[in-house]
Length: 366
Image (cartoon, rainbow, N blue to C red; front, top):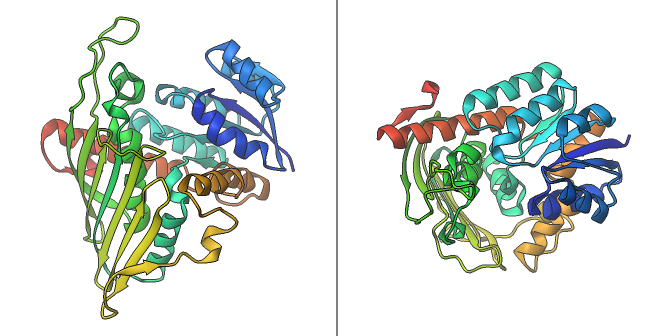
């Protein structure tokens, strides 16, 4: 079965992440691409040998015989484009955050369920080898009863001066919480289970212009946040997401994970250069030491640099975009799905409410 794909979005992310992955898949036919700028869409279509280019996604959905829609556009367009795709009966992959708020995300998840189509919200870092290995160890009971976790996402793009749509609340929905914090909120939930309470304190350390490029004032969103979590199983957690850290690595970021439980400890670290490790110790086994990732976790991915691992995981192996295609072809479940995306959006909304009202928020309030 060949899966006919339409893509909405012509950013560098589409070009670097999705088009290489889909072009390498034997069962994919990319039939059309759509962007706000017709010229850029046509240029990208030419580069990747895509037959048709559009500037109107509704026309693309109506005129092309699609099986699946990839929504890779700006956050403020996710809801409308995804709902159009779902109403047309298409399988849909939509970038995170799923919506601008939990209400939108729930509508998207509910419609996807009603239409009985495959859906995915691609929380990228779930698929990195170290994080999949940590999940495997947790499933095997390495930690025993979970006690607490501490996840830190440090990057520095917020240090750049000037307007950035990622900090424009009307376009992005939130700032660092949704843009990078959502990744680690998902990991926290994936590793330790349901989060029932959240407290958040955000930062506004950067100095940004008061007006957007069109000259209009806009509501500026946070450039960093510290979120404390309480899980349904009683464990506690911290997620620190900041765009104001100086991290001079090829990706401009570092990832840190610390997990503790009744039976042991795990540490995950990715420097986004050459280090991607998991260290741990079981109670009674002595000092913390590196745990060698098994061959089935790596697969054929190169291990010399994190960037090469990243390229191979997403462009050659059947993770994320390629895994989504496989789920359509084979009629198997696809994860993370829209329900996962909506759950993370609920946490984002709860964190923003906590920060606004300076209080702990029960997630059920949202």
